[in-house]
Length: 486
Ligand SMILES: NC(=O)c1ccc[n+]([C@@H]2O[C@H](COP(=O)([O-])OP(=O)(O)OC[C@H]3O[C@@H](n4cnc5c(N)ncnc54)[C@H](O)[C@@H]3O)[C@@H](O)[C@H]2O)c1
Ligand SMILES: O=CCC[C@H](NC(=O)CCC(=O)O)C(=O)O
Image (tube, rainbow, N blue to C red; front, side, top):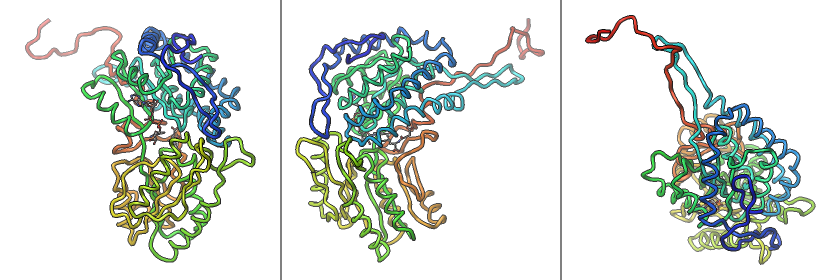
């Protein structure tokens, strides 16, 4: 089992790949990548299956998608454990990931009808009908940080809309992808409707550049997303949805309950070991005693965050990062900020060689004139002290990204002021900035996306509108246009 093409499992014909448990460096999955020939076969299978899948109709497609939901329910413990093992995220958290996958089915069905349903109105010109049709054959690219939930958030709405799919998961999470697709297989999905090709960048490139694709739905880094955007330039007929990273700000202003504020900061910056696109990367705290008190409590709380393997008991808040390479990357990011003038209040450290286990870090970067506008994808929060609210908002907006942003402040007026000026697709008030709702659109501006919001609005990029004017029979109009006689 590795690749799933035309309803059959195939071994890869490319090179060897392995998946490593980042908490203990043990190999948990091995396989061979899909070659370009196998990618072609997957696209051919999706093309051959597409029209029949569409013609089944929404209700029949929904019935199969609901059978997949039953499979998710029946196998949720195994799926949560596999995600934990492969990503390093603690089990309490991967259980919520599987919960989000299950919840996605009803949300996507509702979104299909609400965002892309059918509407008919009688007009003097005839019956005006709006319908939606699938694009055809689409590729779904997934990231490693939510290897189940995020590809699922493209696949489910794409299939409901009548598309067929070729799924290329992150090379770091092949085992989760295999399990997820096996649940679709058990749900009775017709052959060719969903295909899985595994591999690294080569496989990704072979799929993304395939001329037979009608669209590509991508969740991943801004770097890869920009590369795909360039690749799709000159192809206006193909739909490209890009969900990318962020360099997300969180501003604190005039909060009485600093303990509650500290809690929201921890949940914003350190959940999933900082490996969420919505995580707070930059924290803006007012100069002065109240700010000092909040920072002292925050530093203390950061030091107390429990870090450990995904299956440790009692459960840690932070598991391992995805890999030792990622852990070393975060240490390097911190060193870079220190060299630029940042002062660590809590030092991020690589806890165990060979693993992705790191302790969380908090660094005061107020002294750095121009902060690197990078998404440091891990548990390192950059603190900036500000003197007035306008300055804080201006600094918060100094990023090419625009995914999430938040304000913790007791004043509604402050929030209205912030909301009007901040540039981001997710803007929260007195709530953590992670954990976005699947019942709302999810996407960012700037380098965070290409204006194709996902989650509840994923339905929009899964179908195109068809406008018709219809009558049961041809009929002559009461009056003919000047110059016509019949
Ligand atoms: N906005 C969102 O919804 C969202 C959600 C989760 C993660 N992310 C972002 O994802 C990133 C972490 O995920 P990642 O490291 O897995 O992302 P990534 O860009 O490295 O990989 C994403 C996918 O693209 C494939 N890929 C990589 N290079 C490719 C190429 N040249 N051509 C075709 N395919 C290619 C990968 O194999 C993988 O399947 C972070 O930046 C995070 O912010 C964004
Ligand atoms: O890592 C990026 C996604 C993080 C996650 N967002 C969602 O789950 C969006 C909602 C959805 O797709 O259903 C978060 O905000 O924590």
